Image (cartoon, rainbow, N blue to C red):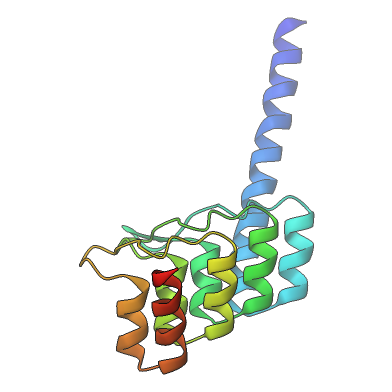
Length: 151
C-alpha cells in the first residue's frame, strides 16, 4: 500500500512539474511575441516569472530581460508584479536595466529604477546601464541615468 501511495504522489508531482515547465515555455513564447494578455494569464496560472531559458546552450536569459529587450513596458510591469528578479544577469552579466538603457527606452528605464534595479550593476566588460544608454545615443535616457546616479 505504501508503494502505491508513493508512486501516486510521485506521478502527481511529476505531472505538476511538467505542467509548470509547459507554462514556463508558453510564457517565454508570449513574452517574445509581446502578447501581454497571454503573459498575464500564464502568470496568474502559476508560470514562474524567474524560469531561466537558454536560447542557445550556455547563453541563459530571463523573461524580464527578454521583455526589456523587446521594449515592452506592460510585460515588464506584469513580470515585476509577479516577483521577477529585477537584477538577474544574463550570460554577459547584463541586467534588464542594461538592455532597456541600450534600447533607449526612458519609460522602461524609469520603471526598472523605481522597482529597485541596480544602477551600478556592471556587465562582464565593466559597462553600466549608463554606458549602454550612451552607446544607444538616447540623450533622455543618458540624462535620466546621470541624474539618478547623482541622487
